[in-house]
Length: 125
Image (tube, rainbow, N blue to C red):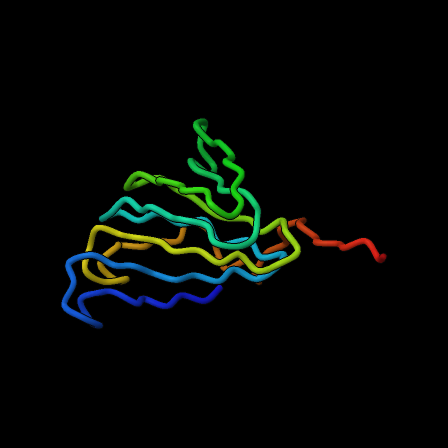
């Protein structure tokens, strides 16, 4: 997963962050929470689903595709799954001045260190 913090305190003195993110085909993000901010995300390309409340009794899945906005309240554990055949491209906005200020905290070990059971297979034409 690639992040580019285009607008932030570091790039232009902003008190909010705007981030361009690319999530490769078949990628599942690590479950995480932002303890200092909510986030809003807009999807430009790709499809998949957001899991909000991951690992809790309130866990819900929200499918997304280009043109969909997702809001994740501060303190909600979440992760993304790319189920499409192209990388996901999205814009995310946080109400704090830098990526570090979001208070991002991972709630699971790196994906490479465990088996997710997810496999992407594309049918041959």
